[in-house]
Length: 172
Ligand code: APR
Image 1 (cartoon, helix red, strand yellow):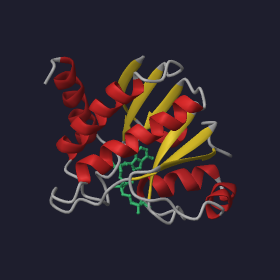
Image 2: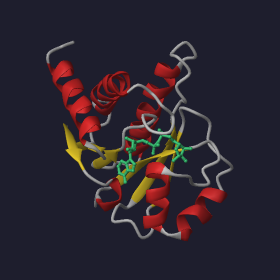
Image 3: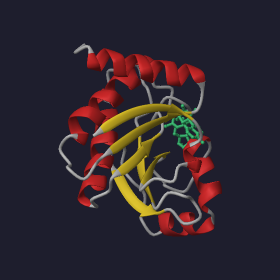
Image 4: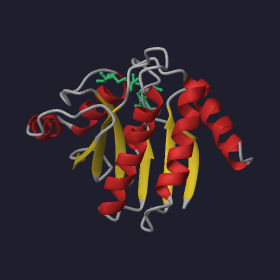
C-alpha cells in the first residue's frame, strides 16, 4: 500500500473514493464540502438528505455522481477547541472509519483532504501527524487498499503533510 502527498483539487481525482470533510448535517457547506457538492451535482445532496446527518468522527459512503470518483466517503471532523475535548481521537476516528468503509467495499484507491484544518481550525501540524499515522496503521488492515493519497489544496498544507510522512517513516 502506498501513501502519497499531492497538491491538487480533490474533485478532479478519478479514484475509487474521495473523502469529504463534511459537517454533522451532511447538507453541504463551504471549503472542500462545497467544492465536492458543486462538482458532484444535486444528486449528491439528494442522497445526503436521506442519511439523517452524521456524528463527529463517523463516516458514510455515497455515490460520486458527476465526480470522476466512483464514491464519496463523508466524514465529520472535530472543531478545534484547544485540544482537551478529545479532538485528536475524533480526528483519528474520521480516517479510521473512512478506511474501514473503503476496505469493506474492497476499494483500491482513496483520496483524502486535510480534514478539520480549514474552517474547523485544527492546527495543521498536529492534524497531519494524526492523519498520516491513521492512514498507515488503519490502512494496513485492509488488503484491497493499494493507494492512499492526501490531496493538499495549498503549499503550506502540502509541506505539513510531507513533513508528517517523513517523520512517520523515521519512526517518530
Ligand atoms: N480539494 C482538496 N482540498 C480542499 C479543497 C479541494 N477542492 N477545497 C478546500 N480544501 C482544503 C482546505 O484548504 C483545507 O486544507 O480542505 C481542507 C479542509 O478545510 P475545510 O474544507 O474548511 O474543512 P474543515 O476544516 O474540516 O471544516 C468543515 O467546513 O466546508 C465546511 O461544511 C463544511 O462545516 C464543514 C466545515
